[in-house]
Image (cartoon, rainbow, N blue to C red):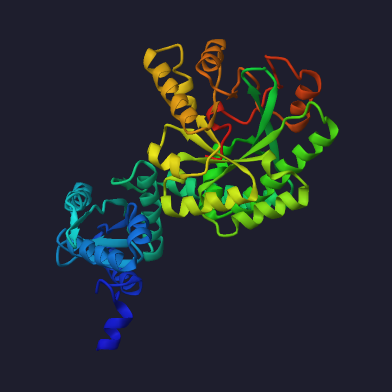
Length: 457
């Protein structure tokens, strides 16, 4: 008896496991078919559970899961099935309901139950869940596909902003198929040489010279044309493809800068900026990869600037400090990107060995529009200077923004007003011809809306 129990139950929460869930679903569907009724499946995934697990360890994580299981039990009737699929995923099967509203009430009750903190060792934890809901159709639904559809709906709920529910519909299946297709294409894009690096010049605001270029990845898709980073970088992050892709961009950018330095010894930009995504930054091989690229391309480490967004930097401050120090030992420059949008404190800025602070475009676009915008930019520049950091303003689109940044003491500027990103030939034309021009223009980059430029996010 005990062996049977073990085979069909999750050892941690004592709830039915996937095998028992599928068995019960099968029976529930057969009963529903006889009555011409429906079965509902609710797929739950805890929001931010990984953060608890990573920061406080698996024991606390396990206790939190057990506490969540208890709360979920209180939300369902004895005849319903509550199962744990593993990790922080649970599934609830509801039979015998008259209206869809009853199913939604269960989802709302779960959301309410999880609103109150779970107290472990005197510490409060909040375990909100994203819930996907799907309803069976008589004689058509199979247990596995019902769970899969509920899972798809749960992803929709998560992407809509967590702690909410979404109901499955066919467009989700279509979206999942489209995503799968894009993922397959992206896997081949690297092998087929469909990726391109475009470069956006950055101008020294005091002299009007191009001091640097930022490397931006573009995907020349054979059918879709030029795909903007916003459409494929998040997918690359989730699937881990960002690692080979990021290595390729880094190598390409360093090689290109080295070539320019040899070709235009007096006029080439002094540095290339490359963005590091969250997944790359957390990868144990990162320092090695960068050292190898620098060795292979012969680029002076001081000519490479790595940009890390503020939110990535603040994810795990202890680990971040170590990683930044190791990168610094290679001799590269480090920039904090999108500054002002995350939650870093000034103290943490002081702790990290940074060289450059990039003011997020959302502050730059307010320059000249409201006094508050100017006050924020002024404050950021003052703090940066006090910490001995150079400052770059991104997203410059008007003369007024450029002039104000210059007046406030900002060192470098980038944005459409100075130059759009473009292929390497277009960038090369700029510093070959207009080494001292203060207004540059590059052929339009059709990589999508300008908010997707500059970044891997």
